[in-house]
Length: 253
Length: 217
Image 1: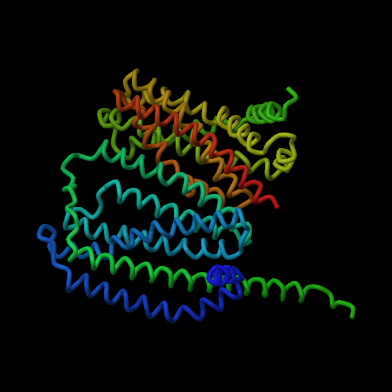
Image 2: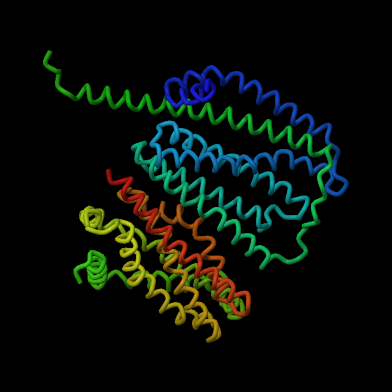
C-alpha cells in the first residue's frame, strides 16, 4: 500500500519534478559506473570471436541500442494510452521525452550495424530484414517528432502524437512481418545467417551488463528529459500569463 | 437519398466533377515518365521493374492528393457540419475516404494498365497490376486519411503527411508489388494485400475520426 501511494503521488508534476531532481544525480552516477563496467567487460574481458575477430565487440553497443530503440516506442505507446484514456499530463511529457531518445538509440543501432556490416558483409549497408525494419522505425520516430514540432499548442500536439503513436504500434508488427517476408523473397541465400550458436557466458555476461547499463542510462536521460519538458511547459504558461497580464487592462480593485 | 452518408458521397462526387480529379493521374504519368530518364530506356529493365514503378507512382499520387481529403472541408467549415451529422463520425470519414478513392484512386487504377504498356509489361501483368492496385489504393487512402486528419489546419501539412504515412505504407507496397507478379507467391501476396486493405479500412476511419475529435476542441 505504501509503495502504491508513493508511486501514485508522483503523478503530480511538481512532486515528480522534485523527485526527479533528487534522484537524477544518483542515477547519472550509477549509469556512468555501469557503462564504464560494461565497456570494460566488453572491450577487455570478453574474448574475440573466432570467426568475426575483434569486430564482434560492436555487438555490445549495437544490441543494447537496438533494444532501447524498441523500448522507447513501447514507452511512447504506453504514454499515448495515458494521454488518450486518462488525459494525464505526465503521460504526454513521458511520450515526448522518449521520442528523441528512441530516435537516437535507433540511429545508434543503425550506425553500429552499418559499421559492423562493413567488415562482415563487405558493404556499409545491406537490405537485411532487421536493418530495414529499424530504418522504418527510425523514420517513424522522425515523423512523430516532425508532427509534434509542427503543432504549437502542447495539448493538441499531445493528442495528435498519441493517435499517430498508437496507429504506428498497430502497424509495427505488420511492417516487421512484411519486411521479413520481402527479405526472404528477395535475399539471395548467400547471406551470412549461420545458425546462431548459443551464446557463451563469457560473451553473454558482458552483453547483459551492457544492456542493463544502457537501460539505466536511458532511464536517466528520460527522467532528465521529462523534467526539462516540465520546466519548459511551466515557462510557456508563465510567458503566456505574463503576456496576457500585460495586455489586459488593470483590474478594478 | 436522405441518409447523411449518401448525401456526403453525392456532394463529394459532385464537387470532384468540378475538376481537379484528373491531376493525380497527370502526376502519376509524370512519375512514370521520369523513371526511364533516371534508369535509362532499356525496355528489358523497365519490364522487370515496371510493376514497382507503377506502384511507386500510384503511392505518391495517392499521398500527394490527400491534402484535399479533409483540408477543404476544414477551411469552409463543412467538417463541423459533418461532425454534427446524425451519423457516427467514423462512418462519415469512411464515406469521405470512399468518395476520395472513387475520384482520385480509381482513375489511377484505370490509368495504370495504359502506363504499364509504356513500360512494356506483358498483358497478363497489366491485369495483375490493376487488380493489385484496386486493393492497394483504398488501403493507402485509408491510411492516408489518418495523416490528413492529424495534420488538419497545419500550414506545413503538405510535406508532413507523406513523412508520417510513407513508413506505415511499407506493407502495402511490399505485398502490392509482389501481388503484381505471377505465380503462387503473387496469389498469396494478393490475399495478404486484401487482408491489409480490410484492416486499414477499419483502422483508418477510426483513427482519423479519433484525430478529428481530439483536434476539434
